[in-house]
Amino acid sequence: MIEPEKFYLFIVAAFLLSISPGPGLIYVLARTLHGGRSEGMASSLGTAVGGLLHVLAATLGLSAIIMRSALVYSILKYVGAAYLVFLGCRALLASRQPLELGAAPAGSNSHPFRQGILTEALNPKTADFFFTFLPQFVNPGAHVAWQLFILGSISVALNSLADLAGAFFAAPLARGMAANPRLRRNQQRFCGLTLIGLGGYVAVSGEK
Image 1 (tube, helix red, strand yellow):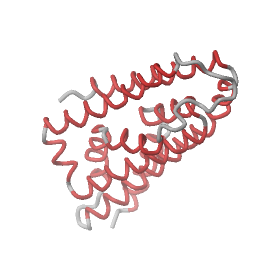
Image 2 (image 1 turned 180 degrees about the vertical axis):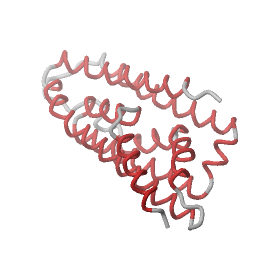
Image 3 (image 1 turned 60 degrees about the vertical axis):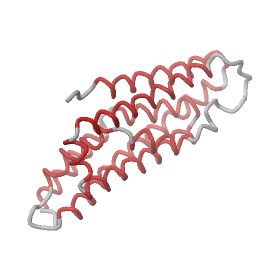
């Protein structure tokens, strides 16, 4: 199985990566500010499921196929970027609608769990991460696929814990902003611009 020295090194590296601000955590924070703690938590769980899909893909060797095909890589990257931009534009449009004090947060019925899955699953940078990061800690003399699955699942779990913590601590701020119509509009604009920015980041980063 996995060599103990490599496993400990992996835990340290994965933990440091999980607490470093990245597109996944920023996305969850934006959704929390947009719809409150429940939406942030649901988004976190959704991105976890999306991350596990990438783990399964890496285990089955699909990540290698994606990374070797510039066309498939580009399609996934731009579809994922377009989806983030779409969510951002919808939040900006919602900020123009009249809001009443105490109304349900905008986007509360927008299926944050499902959107979290799609956002993470359509991000080829996640596939790139698992393809380039996990093999460094695999023992080639043991069952490689099983090791990839274990390491990938641990990485997803650490990232999800960081996302859930971000959603939990961002929720009080979201509730305070929701109590003020003007601040709430700014909250929606912030969410929209953040999602659009993330979509732009995904689109222009990592050109092959």
